[in-house]
Length: 161
Image (tube, rainbow, N blue to C red; front, side, top):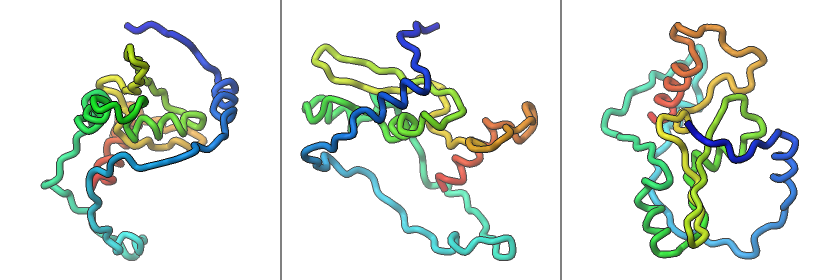
């Protein structure tokens, strides 16, 4: 289904990630997008004796777009604002890949002008939170309600609300 270009073992990947430790000479914000809702302080005090019910927010919609489908990144690429484009979820996966126990797949497209697009495959698990990532034993339930996929979907829904 796909052609493997290169395979890196963990030691080689770690060496490549830590090889360049130079800080960029200048940093600037290109664009600020989106908004943050007000944080509910009641969630800081959640305990077994003080539960806080979770409410489903039906008025919000979440769009897990890929890098090439993101209209903001597309405008930045058209205006030659940068030469490397990646979404936050893909970047966070790359930053934590040395500790990940779950498989992941990144597609890198290089345009003729040298611009790089880091993308995810369709129907991948990039947009879902991981569960039991640091557990000593993974869940044994492969067909019930506690499969890693279902727990991941539940954690993502709670996080988005």
